[in-house]
Length: 342
Ligand code: UDP
Ligand code: MG
Image (tube, rainbow, N blue to C red; front, side, top):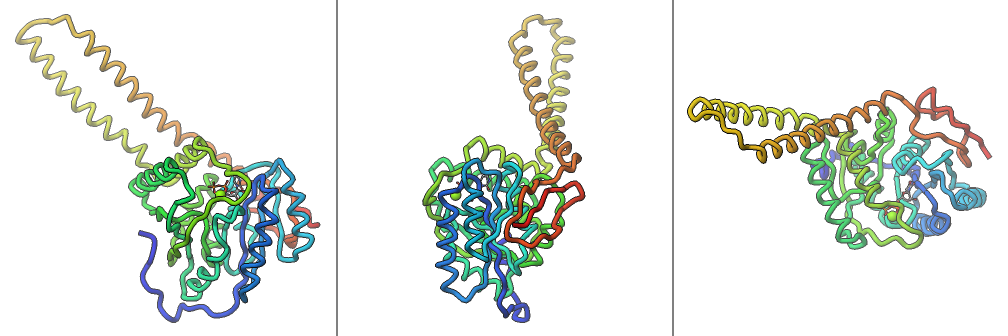
């Protein structure tokens, strides 16, 4: 497993006073964003930690952007990047990671389901020498039974099929050292299944348990249909076993049909031609029709992803940057987002 990669040698201990960048994706969060800043200021303000908050405004349709503008105007440590439309949380996290300048970067949800009170414990682990410290959900008490059930199965299947192992209790809430952030920035793919990418880059990783609370205000942006697509993206992005599966199914079916053919030939030779058999025939025709469609669908799924990667479109388009210096952080030449400094 990813977690607890042994003890970290003493010489890797870190001293000093790192700058923390909190990367906060927001989508229609006008009610939550001001409360988030207030809470973080209170909690982290009480410690000696240096921190800044970088919101990524993911094309909200409510007044989130005005709220962020007001927050950035009255707090020097608050800045935001705004997208030209909704690109999804994974793209928002990517943008935050691209623009963050801290020595450590901490993706965190705006709804306070990831409690900022845990951050000082993350930093302690970082000082001990860990490069990645993820928040390990001690319980999913805030989730419905169905969500818990589907999540358990997703992690089970994913970890079976993929070489990268995802700790089932980890979300996006984690601390990453600058080295990890720089490694993440080199990954060019358009399929941004961040949990998988976090696992892919590796480094010394440790989990810190915390209780994930229920959302305080606003509403969750996830539906089961979105989660299902998210799960498919994750699986197809990190495993080619679903493609290879058809090789084995095909081989087994071929062997069986050879055996069956032999039986039929033998029967005809011994007992003559036998006409009845419509039921078994139609069953087999339908069954193999289904098998072929399934395998074609699987191939199509990967082909579609290949198509998306080959287009090499930028992962997001920036409409506006407020509070960060105007720096070139484009991932590709095509990423020609307009960046305005207020
Ligand atoms: N989010 C986002 N873009 C989206 C959907 C969500 O940036 O398209 C943000 C959202 O504002 C929040 C975080 O992602 O900060 C987690 O979303 P939510 O709380 O709705 O998810 P849940 O906690 O229910 O998994
Ligand atoms: Mg939430």
